Length: 409
Image 1 (spheres, rainbow, N blue to C red):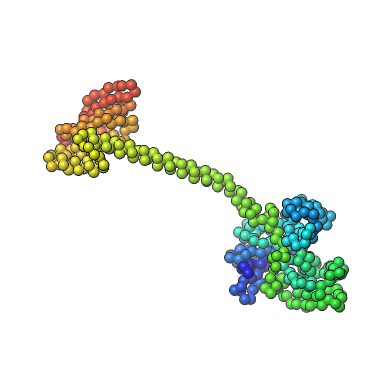
Image 2: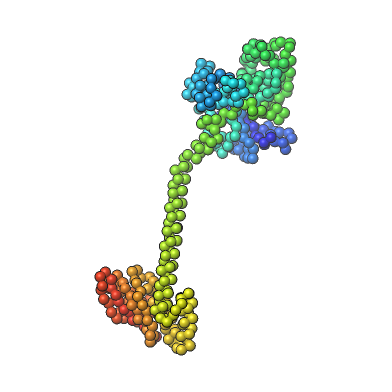
């Protein structure tokens, strides 16, 4: 048996909840009472079964000429309309297990009440697995009529779905009527759960029927340990619009738009990331190509370029052996000017030549203003002496040549 917490829904809004935990490891279950908050804490890890007041539930056995569930529900709504005090459109219908052809057990409750119960429980964070009439939690024993009396109310159960709620003041009359209606199939015994005073509520019954009184000082919840609920012979009210799937849908529905927007944002961010990655890869390839070109221009005799940076360092080390001052000047000029070139939009480097501690740079820029700004930046940031050797406008570009010298030279 799955660990369960059986909860009784109070009939009074100001009344406290009562519950009992049933488990194979709990030897002596204890009936507890408390607030809804304490109930939520107690229910963690248990299957939640809520018993709703029998006074609010009508149990019917309806004859319908179809086995199709959807058609059956439509037929049931109007099959016993005259027996229902409320408009059928304001009622929720739940089906039990169909054991006899064309005979369907049905539980009927007001939609407003279902909404009130579930809103109260769910707002506190309590997820309900089963919600059922308390009348179908009364002990079910073959050939026996069970009566459970608590305070001023009684629950009667004489069969799988033959159960009802009655005020104690009307118990004698209702029991007499029930025995009359079942005269052809009377129970062998009547078992009354309650206190000693319950005997006074019962009418005279046939001597053929054995009447037995059992003490149930803790009411219905105190009986469930020895007489657990037979869930195959009950009706879960959480059907149709109140099924678990539908309840999850109601919880999910307000968040659907937000989730859709979050999903769209994720896809957009993923697309941007892919685009940026592609752009960075293209820029990396362009820089690598530019580095190869700079190296080739600086060392025209080079045949194989694998890693231009390391090869450049190696060449500079070789130059250091000839002229320390020249190698330092070359390195300084190359690094300083390269940073400025990279930051200049629209610049297309054509060639670089190094000779006599000077760099001759052939390049293309969008206009003369960019060329002049480039000169100013090189002079200021790279600390060089820069001269514009030539500047020729061809179409929408300016082809220019810069001569760059280190200040120390």
